[in-house]
Image 1 (cartoon, rainbow, N blue to C red):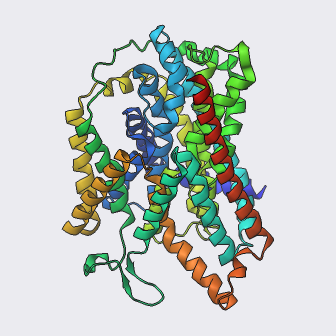
Image 2: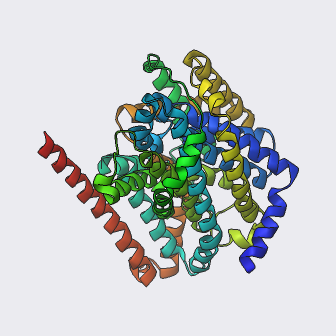
Image 3: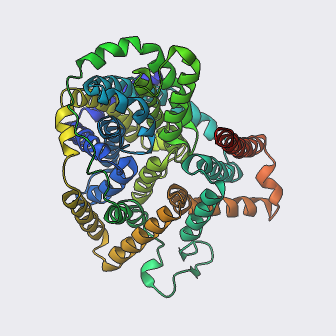
Length: 501
């Protein structure tokens, strides 16, 4: 009953006219961004963060706007996947396997309608899970000390490796680069400048927002300048989405199973929507076996990944809000927003900022309904955005990035730093190294170092404090098991490829 009371207070916050307007704008903008091939929720949210500061939004309003964009991107990613066979983001890759064959058969509208309903169900299941389980996780997290939090940070880096890249070595190398960047600035303990190279602008460290916009938005523009493929894709008629709404009832078991699988995958720190989409599709395909025509335009092959990735998107908010550990690349950016506003996510967030937390949860329920209403009748309108020329879209992205970053501090140095991170992100892509571990290292490095030093101070320099409690041992064991599972899974994939070739 206490949760219902908090949720009622949250709806009172979410139903304020400003918050309703921001949720609607976020859902619409997020759907448009998600439909654009290659951008996705990470780039969309990173690009919009500077505007939240420019408009002077309060933390609750800013979080509602950006999380609505996040959910909208998860919805919109399916549009280009189904119509153009170009994933709007990484989780939408699995949707192309059956969505595009359906579009080639003239069932594009049905696939879009079905995916919209599956996304709605998956996101709603995740929001209910967020309502029920986040407070329970908070009660458990209050028992955490500095050693336990340090173990959680180790777990975050362990889980991000196998999901964001096929190479664990590249993922951990990227994480180390992020940790190195996180040490830039004046040391909080000794007050000694570290890696500033005499630039006073770096004494406060590297601004999260500047780095994120450069790593994702600017690097995306550089990649586009190098590769402008996709202009010869066939233009397909969208058609009506009504048949897809009807077929959703037939796919109800698939949607239910995939929503649960996606939610569990999203709760894992560092996993995110990509793992939820992949697991939902592959497990559903194995579950149905010969009864399915996956890969040939099976509607269940569209419903499964869409329900899975949207459920995972909501589930990834739980470790971010409850523990201060991002559950995905996008929640890592949301974590940067909260830290920039001097708000520390963690167990005390629910007691210190109840209006913000429960207002966000209530806004997610409202945003899901908005997204369903927007995505079903306006599918044709959103699809036309895909026909906009790249020479028009990418300069707009660059303009928004420059204006937004400059408005933060009115510093030309930040613009140069953003460009430097853009080039750095481009180099990472060329080397096939993921950027998400770099973001995690930059965001979590300071807190990881702080908790390590605090634990050492409490123990008088005795390193055994890091593994003395049962909680830390369990977390380390879980991290090791995930690393081993990733290595075994990669070995199995390589063996399967060798057997086929």
